[in-house]
Length: 308
Figure 1 (cartoon, rainbow, N blue to C red):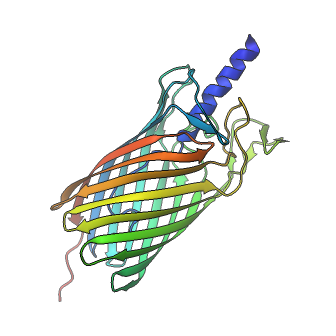
Figure 2 (figure 1 turned 120 degrees about the horizontal axis):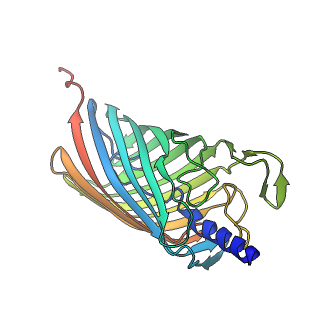
Figure 3 (figure 1 turned 90 degrees about the vertical axis):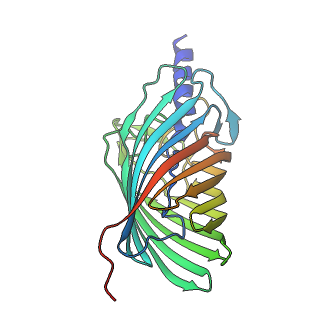
């Protein structure tokens, strides 16, 4: 009986695991688009994000666990994009996240996750075609538990990201972008003296979290106050292990996901609104999640225009 309860608890934790990192934000002037704030202007964006799933991939096996029911992650996010020049923007953001399940007795987590900062530079812009170099970093700001997955709101690792983005925009408003990134992750400390990963037992509380990479393509329309796009995104860890059968997940797991979605924005003047919807269609060691977000944008001038 005790063994059965232990297995059930492990299954509960495993089911919840894959939500970490699945709460998506949707703003204008993001680190993954070709939109820039003009010089001396900024945009403040606040959004609500919701992600849920009741099935997950244990390695490549899609399964469910009725002891957990539906796993939900909700987040409030604030982000600021600042135009230093017409070709150079900086972006900063921080999310507040809460996780919960509809069944079981695993305790939720909530709090501020990781603060992130980005630099976006457009170094080629010719006849509608542009290339962008983007660099970012994040650091944990909340005292959350990284290895209580998937109830954890993050992995407690510092990250550094290098991204290259190519974009073409027709004068009629149709555009297409393609991007690729590599994410470096630091080691983390956990509140235990031993752990198992890659079939080995480690007598340490220091855990190597695998680096990751991602890629995306977007096809959309942008003209004056209206923007709309469809996208395909894929992300994966660069190595790592799989969730063991009927066992708990762990930060060393190789999470992979492919998702499709749509995004829309309406900003006639300084104030605008946007929305995003996406669904994971294929994955490994992640939840088959459905996500949506809604946001409010406020654009303003933070310095006077240069005199000509």
